[in-house]
Length: 312
Image (tube, rainbow, N blue to C red; front, side, top):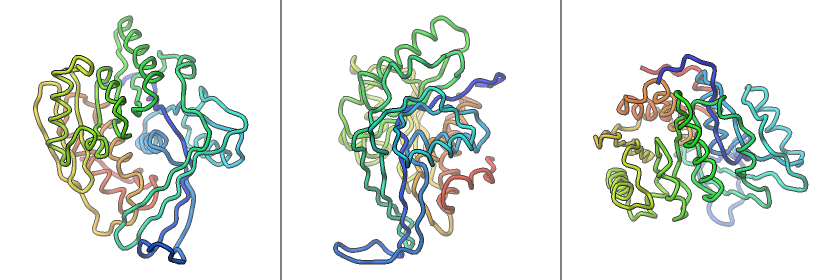
């Protein structure tokens, strides 16, 4: 896909505040330890992906929900400073900010996340319905809130029937809820997360992606044979099956020193989408670029490092 216009990528779902503590080693239960460093940053899958894609030069809009909680001020200002469009977001009263408490272990680079969303509602179809689809060439979803997300995806499909420049739909299948699988039949690209692979009884990337392909070919509820499937698998790299059924895989690119794996998966997704948006037919290069930029990011804290990353 060659983009010759000024359209945006729309990314949909939750935005959170990450509270991050860097520790020398992961503490044992009932330990009292001092962290090496601590900071906070904007988080959430779609939120992180919008940051990385913006750093790679794409115009992004985030459709999420906000509240009058004072801690949201930092998040909103950060989005505005990065020129990530939030014009269609809904603001709620008397709701709390979703929080993720993150422990980053310096000796391994691993992260442990404890998440809480006390009462802030997710994005609804009526929020999405405000968006002018003429402004977008790609819409990226996380698989959750199936009834609402189904209506959003169906609206895009109906829109595509009326225009020459079709909107591509990508879907992250990550959260462990069986019903999320119902959304795959509407997507052009499905990214199968390791956690969700367990739902379909798989424990390695190749088995998982072929299992999903089988489901999407043989089961009428999920049928979508012309879809690119991608399965990132942490240190084991990633694999993909294109819409003709060809299988590809690529190893991860590890830094000599791994310092921050938080958001590595979101960075992989960003690298993947960046490549597909440039050339939708080059699936091997897309998963390679996803692995490369995710590995690169793990050598740095945060996501601004990707501004210095060069794709091959």
